[in-house]
Amino acid sequence: MLFRAALALWRGAPFADVVNCDFVAQYGRRLEELRIEVVEQFADIEFRLGRHVQTIEVLKTAATEYPYTEGLQYRLILGLFRSARRVDALAEYRKFRNPMVRDLGIEPSQELQMLNQQILRS
Image (cartoon, rainbow, N blue to C red; front, side, top):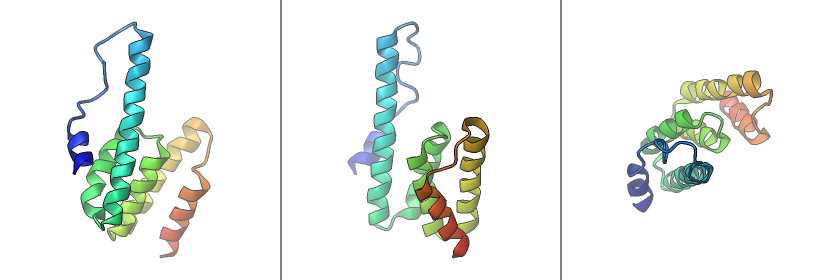
């Protein structure tokens, strides 16, 4: 699959060794945003194919690198839940929510809160 191959080519922060160049830094941030989009699209496709377990590690890696990216966190929690790892899914929600509230003063989106409630009720 092309998504998996593309993700395997990623080697860390783009242009990390270039300093004092706003254009390059801005371009590097855009590449990181595109990477996040690819990971999210990859997860969505894999989930539709029922490959929840196989997708978790990719999501964990990306969620660790981008801890405030809610789309990654949502998919990671959903993947864990659908892989019968309810306790891990609830732990990931807390791991995401606590710093969001503490550091940024905001709650996760309603969608993510609803997922958490669904997991709690299951």
